[in-house]
Image (cartoon, rainbow, N blue to C red):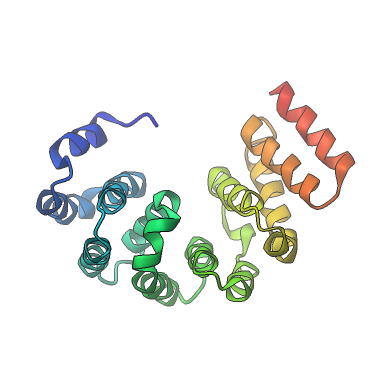
Length: 219
C-alpha cells in the first residue's frame, strides 16, 4: 500500500514500540479522519500479528478497545482495520474481546450502521459461527452505503471467503452490494466490475458473469 507521509511518520516512530503506539493513539485519534484512524489502528494490528505471545495479543487488543471507549466512529475504524489485516492464527486469541467490541459498536448505533453490522457478521464468521454471521449479514442495508469501495469490500470479502455454503446463504445481499458499488462508480472501476462478475459466477449466473467480466477488461 502507498502510505501518506503522515502515516509513514507514524510507522517510523512506532517501530513496534507498544508504549509509543498507545501514546500516538491517544493523541492522534481525536483530530484524525476515519481513513487516518484506520491506518493508525492497522499499526496496532501489525504489532499484534508480530508478537508470538498470545497473552500479548490479548493485552494489546483489550487495551486498545478500552482506550477507544464508546466512540462509535473510532470503534468502527478500529474494527474495520483489525478485521482487514488480522491473521486467522492471531484472531483466535482475541476473538472474545473483538466480539464484545463489535457488538458494542452495533449497540451504540442501534444496529443501524451497516458497516458496524458487517463487522459483527465478520467476527461471527471468523469465530466459526456461520449461522449468526449469516443472520447479521442479511441485516446489512446496502442502500444506506454510498461508498463504492466499502460496498465492494463487503461483496469481495464474502464471495472470496471460500465458504460457498455461507455465500449461498447471503448471496442476495452480496449481489445487491456489488451492483450498488458498480452503480456508484459509474460502471468504470475494473476491480468493482470484476467483483460483480465473480458474484454472478458463484451464483451460477454464467452469462451475467461473462458480461461483467468483459466490461471489467474494457476498463
